[in-house]
Length: 456
Ligand code: URA
Image (cartoon, rainbow, N blue to C red):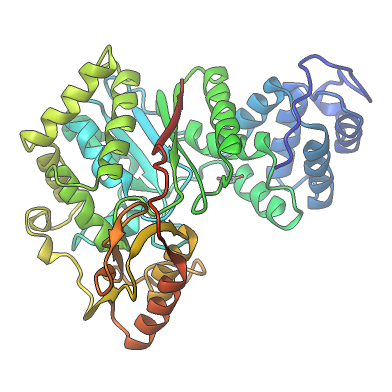
């Protein structure tokens, strides 16, 4: 990861201090190349003109490369984020009473967190007004997963979205608005010019979309490990710190939780299978790691939303909405409000189901030492559970459910996982790939903490 932080107010190189009319992208590139700091006005100019098509890609690529080598100060990073957030629609949630809290995950395998967390937090009284995407990946995004409920739609107007948040405290809308178009354009450029892996650029890219989505407070789940964007823990911490710093500059309460993604989250990987696991979690029967994640993120959201003053109080509130069923009822209310058949919340056999299931049996005894997280995601993708291109359709019913996680013991002939498929050939491919991704060892691996840290 290229990560250099120049000191704020350090040397000023090149032509500075010009009014916007006299600014030239050439001068700004020169200034950054020489190690200077761009002013907020210069960054605003650069982003506005690039979004409008008045700065060519080759100049912006040169700037991105200069940023990778020279770094950006905190002030520059915050200014870049705000400029990108302002490049398109900014959702105004101020007419909704109370503190609106958003949650963002940097993504991973089996990440179904919003499906359980959003109703839990809403049942505790924090309003959830969330925009979500489909995206490419091992499974669909939150929207695809929610479409496992027949009839459910996120194609709702902003007006309906706001009214629903006011009425029942929760709504998730598809990204119909033009959110941070500068980031979209810039990310596509960075992707082909080897300028993605710079911490300021990654943090500003993620946070620009969050800031434009209008929440007062933001809780971030930054994943680390083989199935995460940030493979190294130190990089995950650096990204978390950078995003929390940006949130503070923008006047939004921001906290980040750094969590393990060295194996899939929970047991289920695949759209409807993950919905089922989220429902089980809302019934109090979720996998240990997933429950812990929902409790930790939920606690941060209740604190940020002003519903709890201390962590213990927040945890008790979250526990209560699981035990008294109100979190599960909130999910049903939410599904129904967006046109879905909520009976599947109470009877998960109504969710999409694959035609074939096959247990994958272990050919020997041992402890699960390692599960290659990315590979499990690819198994789901190969079964048809994810999208390789924006146009691909997605099979909501397929995927895998792990029977064992890292540290568990398995005897010869016992199941490691069950595959859900609609095509026997794809099932065979996924079985082979799964077996190559799962490593058995003679001794139990040392336990690793699931929550690596919290930054607020
Ligand atoms: N995800 C984003 O949204 N932006 C980046 O730059 C990297 C990952």
